[in-house]
Amino acid sequence: MPIQFVYLIFAVLAETIGTTALQASQQFTKPLPSVVVVVAYGAAFYLLSLTLTVMPVGLVYAIWSGLGIVFIAIIGFVVFGQRLDLPALLGLAMILGGILVIHLFSASTSHS
Image (cartoon, rainbow, N blue to C red; front, side, top):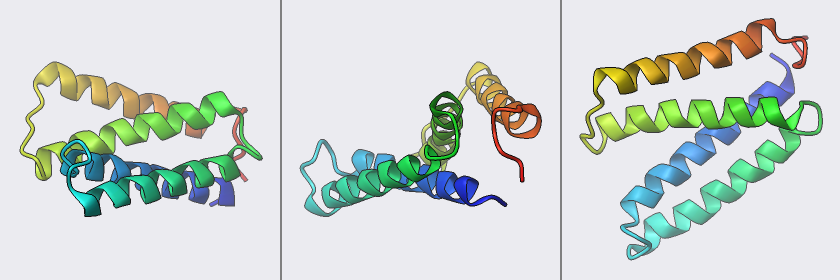
């Protein structure tokens, strides 16, 4: 797997951790989750910047935000008990499908 995709995956994971901690921080009233938010988002943006040295910003952002949406929806369900209806699940499936199309078929990303 090319290193830019490794950076991008870790950026998505850091962003997901940051967003989860944001929910847990209760509007920044809890110190530990608040610190996790800042550190995780800092790491996410740094890793995202490394990815942008070799991939176009539009594609990187589409993958980063799309995977982040899907991961947060899963975490919201598992950790916070938030439910998704059928249209929401179909929308998430379409986001994943779009990411797969970009990754598998787009000549704009490096597949080496």
